[in-house]
Image (cartoon, rainbow, N blue to C red; front, side, top):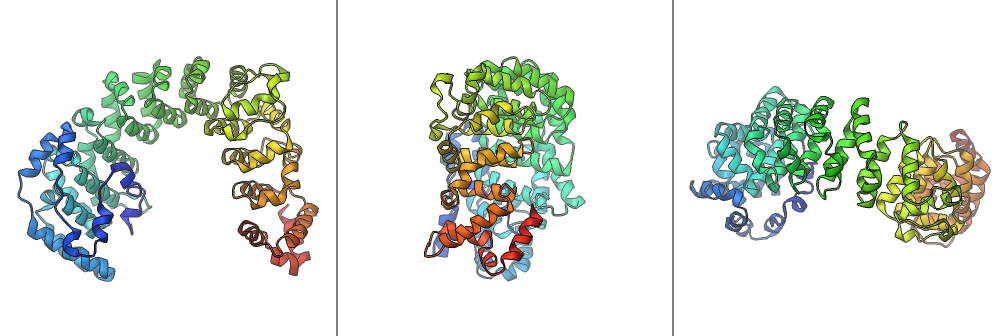
Length: 516
């Protein structure tokens, strides 16, 4: 792993953990000011869960000499990365026996991250020392913000998130970590703590690769206390952890979770501001027909109530679950909710769903305010377009005016909708060509817009231009680009290889014919 800071585990660290002032410290020219001991007193005062950690920090002497040595090593490695290997090994020897004390201070934690960036041997040594220090020490470190991030970086060095080989020693070290971190009785009360939740999310991710079996034990233990699990799903931080768990758990665990905790509670959870997110992930993760039917039926009976509460993420998940199974039922439910039951009202279906607003058929005149489109509305329609039973959606789109089609292409949410339509294998070529007609007529506007040009790319890639249309377009493009410095237009000329078209027209056309 070349760079832990750019890995999946740490790329969003500042956003996730808040202000750390790491970059500012490193960029200061005076090396003596780069690394200063940072007090965590404010953090401990704000967080009662870490009161013991505060006492833990002050129980050991600040390792000032070792930290000064590490500062020098960090500066040398920064100036000359070529020598990092030898210096890492030397510094690791100097740190032996002081691993725990170094994890307790922000400065030393930053230095560990900087010096031992992705260094497997260091990660292994630190983890072994932490695990040998006992469960109480491990839990205290997890509750300390700087140590929490360092543990996260060390865990990433032991994982194979970048498809690196994980040897048995690393697996053994990680197993010791997982045995504590995924011990439900130990961490149950801490799951809604942000630092703990973040670390455990990474532990679960790693465990899904290493397969230690501790995640299975964690879920089974949790299922023996269903009230606590329901409370965690409604917690701001704990719900994020369960997002990951329901995706990484196997189908057997999802079955156990459903029958022990979730059965009969999904509707109640789906309306909660935090719990609805793990519910969505759970819905999209289930694989067995039995579980799909149970989950789908339980929530479909409350479809209108879920819509009325605007929990559109749940509706999107239901629409995805219904693919090739309950398509007609979903379409009918949506038509009923948006007031498009009658045949005369169905042309308004797409505008209603796209904006997530109800309107009567008398209000619809083939156009609507595309700017009012909603993300979830677009996502629902993108799924419906790929249904076998998509006549209502296609008929509604075909009833839109040419101007509205163009506006959809220029709108981000509308652009994705049109791209899904032109890519869909369940929409006939005749319908695609009819809907694409206004886009072809206004090709210059479509190409030069930084949103709608993606729609043009899909039209071209999916052969919705025949060979005669392609030749005509290239001739017009060849004329339009003369004296025109529009970046988007010139980029499209490069994409379509206008130069080759001008110089070797027959060869260019032959290649295009072969692609049709």
